[in-house]
Amino acid sequence: MNQSNEIILVKISGDDKPGVTSSLAAIIAKHNATILDIGQADIHNSLSLGILFKSKQEDSGFILKDILFKCSELGVSVRFNPISEEEYNRWVSMQGKNRYIVTLLGRKISAELIASVSQVLAEQGLNIDTITRLTGRVPLEVEEDSVTKASVEMSVRGTPKDKQFLQSEFLRISQDLGYDISFQEDNLFRRNRRLICFDMDSTLIETEVIDELAERAGVGNEVKAITESAMRGEIDFCESFKRRVSLLKGLDESVMQEIAENLPIMEGADRVLHILKKYGYKIAILSGGFTYFGNYLKQRFGIDYVYANELEIVDGKLTGNYVGDIVDGKRKAELLRLIAQIENLDLQQVIAVGDGANDLPMLHSAGLGIAFHAKPKVKENAKQSISSIGLDGVLYMLGFKDSYIEDAKRR
Image (cartoon, rainbow, N blue to C red):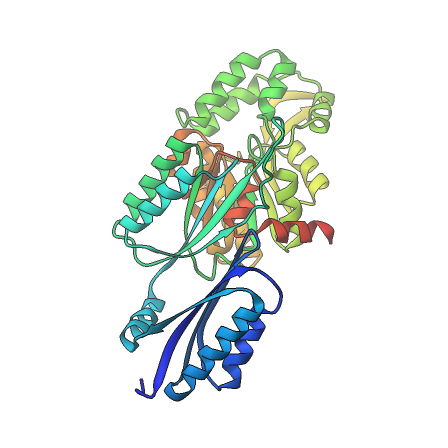
């Protein structure tokens, strides 16, 4: 850099008010200086603004004097730091470093969580560039029965020393403190996802429908035991499916309508489905459950695709058999890839959400696979997980802020 030039970092702090940024930028522009970088944050109406500029050496004194007077007039504090050419070039060289997004999810965000996550990032040689609160401001007093949620997003830069160890540490912290920690590469695909595939039972709805049917058929305990064993991955899904369906023989078809009309919708499901539809996402249900209930949700929420299992019904009664191929874990992954192809999407643009062992193939196929309130085995083998809040936690993993969500709800 020409020795007649200087690089100066201006740090502004004080009460936030309109006109601070524009006034200072106007001063720099008046002296034909160049802004090299700028960043601003507002915490509880407290402004933190940084402007890095380059100017001719003979002009820099006038710029600093004008900025000093303007800050005094505006009632904000200012500090100036000269930056050497070596420091600046080292900062520029960091541009090529990998970037990651760390998303923290919970009912509230604790200082212990922030400290633990920050320490792991520092030990891995990662630098935090920005920290952004995605959820709305938290009131001082919260009613006991209210359902709260909190999310903070960190943008970090660098190359982890041991990515696998970093993720295992985040999993440990999640388990110890009761939070969810998402670690994603910050790339073009993360900002351009367009398809989300949900499991249905225990994901979009708070029940396993086959257990509900079994209760009505008087075989609840037998079917529930098989269901739980399959969810833990102890027995093959297809075999467990055949066993469970056979036990429903003779159940009246009217029972299915009664159950469908009273399905308990998962916390946050209404919100995530509504918002993603508003933002142009295609939504699919890929379920080892039944099409009857998937189609009911399709009508209710405007879901685009439903693939599930078809129960055989003769003379208004379940026969204990099924029609067509079983939608198991392998089939779910195949369907996810098929829908992505139909929608002309790269698999990196696809999100999959599920809770059971039979969801793992589709969670691994998608660019973003999320284990939702899943069993330990599923959670450990998924790329990401949500266990501390509702299904709308998916929105925060995608970088949505509550302000975006409220804006979409008003449309």
